[in-house]
Length: 185
Image 1 (spheres, rainbow, N blue to C red):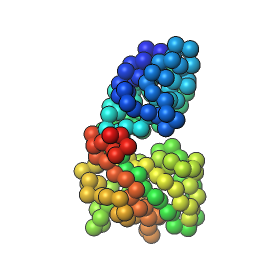
Image 2: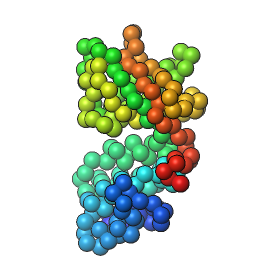
Image 3: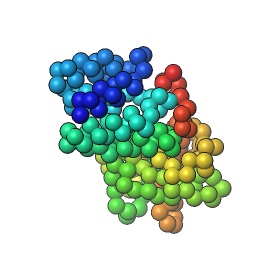
């Protein structure tokens, strides 16, 4: 597992910083001190869809599994490297539906324009559960990325789980595969 984390740290650009300001060198220091869980946390906290590869996230998922820690987030991020990053501000309509869980288990249909319904997985960023009528920042994992490429910040898409519409979402950010986000440059 230490080797997995070392290999992942080697993929981090020298100038990259985690949200707490840590570098790949800090990760190596954690590993030298046998702080594997903290090293994994720091590696998972680096932002950079432009440089993070599927291999990077696979290494983190494998390390998490060896540490008996949840790996679902790392698998999600690996999928984003293949399919793109799409974040939205989702407002559910009031209804009697069950709450939406945070961890990417719901895959509703989305109208991405002109009645074109497409499937996307959902991962709640800002809450552990979204109640009917609630609002949250959500990551969408588009299963057919080419159909979503026209979206830009400010565009509104609708979530469908039958009739009527289940929610509306305003695009916050969309980056196709390999595109560098401004904070990644």
